[in-house]
Length: 263
Ligand code: NI
Image (cartoon, rainbow, N blue to C red; front, top):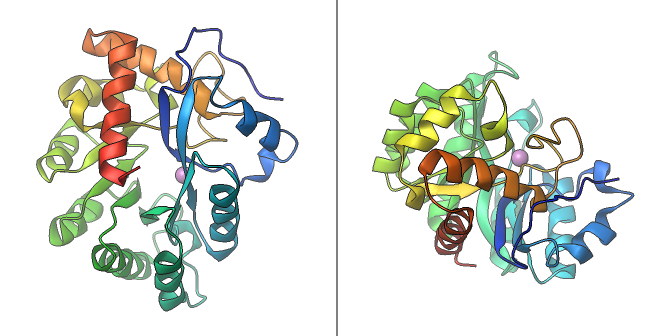
């Protein structure tokens, strides 16, 4: 089952800018959990598809639930030796009005370093597709900060670097490009020192809150099934870092998310 926050949250005030409710870990509680989201404090959720199978699944969720939106892309971890049908991705984007972003796309050198060129090529192509469809991008960057930044500078997209794991200097570059920094449960971890420095340094107006659910549950639920209502614990930590109220963190970051994705 899923953990329930003990923190009082205003109904329908939180937006989760990055989740994966299609994940099999939600199979025994997905409907119950999503039907309670408003009462648990959540107003909107963006689910990210990472290959054609999960794209179908997140589109089903946005068909079924008013408050669910979709991002569609080819995750760098799926960039294997198979060909990817980018024309099909483009068609799917044009056919579905609840697709609000291209992603996850980006680079993951933690996963593999032997296919960097292939990962970069897929990233470039998806940035072009996003631009052609006037959509923002949701960027996955793991252990690939320099190359990610270099490619972003070439394309200057609208978008967010999700689950940000770079330095303060990189965060400043991202903000300078007019992009957003995605922050989730890692902010509450004891070893999340650099992310806390990033959060302190960049303006709240450039931060989006996210879960990456079912992964990366914040403390005090680290290791358990993550879901959008637990964002309150990330907001609480961010409020402490920024010296503002939790309500302000939630409302400013929600507005940022609405503006970026047009939701
Ligand atoms: Ni994700």
